[in-house]
Length: 77
Image (cartoon, rainbow, N blue to C red; front, side, top):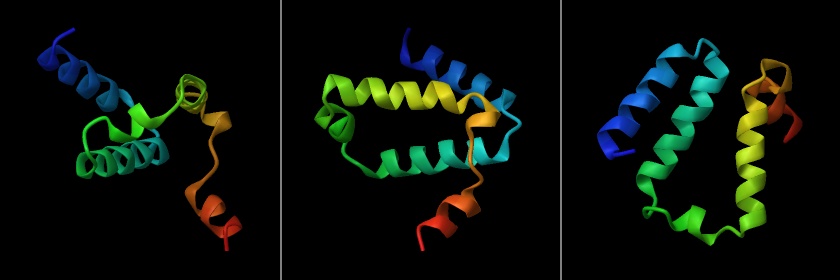
C-alpha cells in the first residue's frame, strides 16, 4: 500500500469514527508523532512492547473498554 492509498484509508477510518474520545486520542497521538523524529519512538520498542501497543489499540475499538479522559486525569492527581 502506497502513501497516498494509506492516507486515504486513514481518512476513511477517521471519518467513520463517531466517538469523540477516541478521535481526541488519535489527534493527540498524531500531533505528538508529528513533532517527534520519524519512527524514533516505535523503533525503540521491543517486539513485545509493539504487540502490547497494537493490542491496546485493538481493544480501544470497543467503547466498553474506554475510560473517560476526565476520569483518567482525575485519578492521576
